Image (cartoon, rainbow, N blue to C red):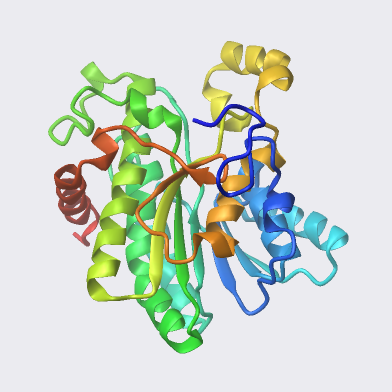
Length: 315
């Protein structure tokens, strides 16, 4: 990790904001989907991308909240091109509906930012009866990406512009279960530890991006796939842990990133010319970072891909 405030090779540091890393970039003609865009990093990412001229589709669970965020951004940036669409990543049916409607609209897709997530809730199951963090943070984005990939390939081919897929992971990926992904115990409530399960889902985000990058490179497709750690940020991810959330909000201003700083790496990986052609990397503080040994395990990534395909295939 970079020392807070020290610039890395990119010229940016942990203190850089999303606006700073995107300054001067012309994103007009590009279209992006941002999941979880109605709060936190997702909202700031949407705002900065729109400021650069990108047409942003806010993929959100709560459409009313999404529309309010859109209105706020448009007041600040009158020329912003933003649409709001409903997407619940905890429901495969909702994901398929979103992808079908999006692909049928004829709208191109240059950038997919898999941003949404839940953090360390009590043991719960998704609509498909899969542990909620693994289902939402990984499987939902895995399915969404697969369903939008043909659109992205077509867009990249016709526009002659590189497509970019960005998975928001976390340094929490280092604190997964010992074996990394518990393929045979995904739904085992008796051995569930919320923080380890969160780490497992964030590890899966990196493995997904790495295996996707390998496959896209093998196909010769002009689309990159990368993962990133946004930084330690006080957001509503901690809503299931009231005491911890309160403590973080109290002392966080002294050592945590704010949301504009937290969205910087996302905007850097999604837009910056320095990242052109870079794929299968893990970023932190708007620089290439170093993921854990498990996150770089190519065999584990392939096994996770096959496992995820099986879980997300139509029943």
